Amino acid sequence: MSTVLAGVRPDDTERQVAARLAGGLVALGADPLVVLAAGRDRLSYRHPLPTTGPIGAVAMVVVCARRQGLIANVTRWIRFTPATAEEEDVQRRLFEVEHAFFAATRPGAVLSDVFAAGTAAYAEQGFAADEWTRHHQGGPTGYNGRDPRAGASADGLVVSHQAFAWNPNVPGAKVEDTVLVGNGDPEVLSVAADWPTLTVSGLARPLVREQ
Image (cartoon, rainbow, N blue to C red; front, side, top):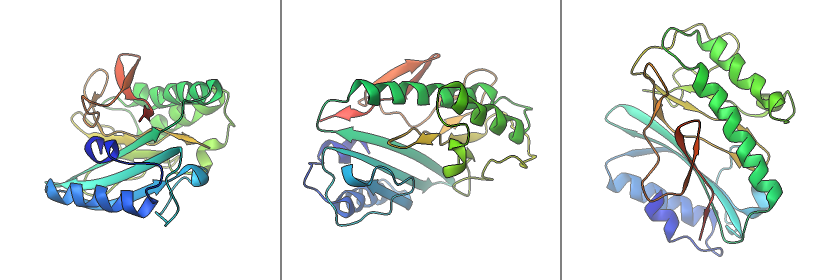
């Protein structure tokens, strides 16, 4: 994603960007199971199937790619104009929602309890209390993109060395990476060294990259 998105320009279409991402994943030996893209005019869509519309000033892209059995799930944002103070504030608060999911994802925890801790953070961070109902929030990842998708009735236990991809999102902002659970903070598997990050509670989290 870092390599492909570095070459994206505002007049590229969503489908062109998705095609390049899919081709890049195949070249690496990964199967592109989901490739999403939303340009400036479609950032309100939480699961944006690519269209012929242009990327424009800001874009969100998502991939779910399988290699050697593991499906990695990643969301990244790029922009060609500076972010507003309001946009930066939304992103900062969304990182705190994600941290609530991470903090609760510990070996032995019941998945429904982790889900409850993460979803409760929306209201704590000033978002609508029911914001989590508008798109799935992620969960364990493995042979399926979410294995299973987390929810209030998910009764499985978190285990050590289990892969997770939480997916907190609000209108115009979303964060998603694949992590590996340990006894402390999870290990982030999918943040590239050349992508700008912000350290949030000890973890490097991806910023919107200005191009």
